[in-house]
Image (tube, rainbow, N blue to C red; front, side, top):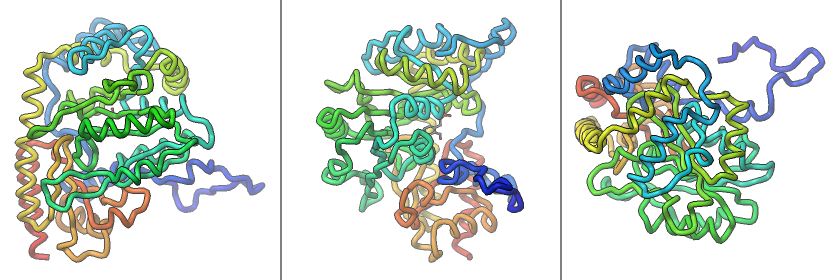
Length: 404
Ligand SMILES: Cc1ncc(COP(=O)(O)O)c(C=O)c1O
């Protein structure tokens, strides 16, 4: 946080802060984590697990360090990890990727997204973004000089229904300046998993307007009920126009390792690699080696991951309902959006403040996921990537809401 007394202009009146940096705030999600520490609250705000990462992956990282893989990796990624990404994408998506020309390993999918946007956008280009959206996409668009065009995902009327876009609204967001659409499926914060028909509709617009799709698929293995993850790159006509972003953070419970990647055609990849090189040089070398081990885990690992998350979802959902929330049931990812109308607060921010300070549970105010804050003024988001003990303690505290 910049202290209030800190000057924002030089003695000559020249602004010290860029117009771009002035246009967005610090992350609300990360701020809620700091508030959780401050007030001793249970952190259901930020999406990181509070349980251990798999032993075999941690061992692989330790062995890599012991084997002195401690210097810069190849800037676009260690060969072993790129090879493992290729094998996994063939196995799960049926896509043939050239590890030498089509993969850029980055510092998390966060860097993969901004490096991709910086690689493809010129001033004045438009980027279509569904809202509510993962918080980073807004600043990413500003930093890359693109103009975001937001399209609303409308909440379902019933808890089990799906969030959905209006086809006319999506079509209206595309135009001659559309450079790309950002997709995130399974989706944070809504839990929506885009269907094949929806992705085909997006595909048709991309083809009609000559636009790219940048798809953030970091929750691809966290799916519930009958939901099926479909990568838009697998649809006819999209292989060459898609940048597929993924990473280790969520699938292997290692959000602090900062390893992610972008997969795209050789032409797009060579631009992404240049941007990535000058942004960060490379992702942590020993952790990339451990990534190769992680991506080679058997299918049973992914089955167990999805089953464990399903159990956590089904633990938190009834607790939220019992505390008085109207909940939306996620089909994927590890968040629950909840409607707070019942509690009679002025807005989501004052409610989230009450929750963290007085009730002892940190959530994320819904407005931080929207370009128009009023759309999220009745919602907060809870993350359930937590142990049963954490979820149970949160449930116990949330019941206090009934008494306030
Ligand atoms: C949709 C989405 N993309 C990207 C990220 C960040 O991923 P990484 O840790 O790989 O940078 C998150 C983290 O919550 C997320 O929800």
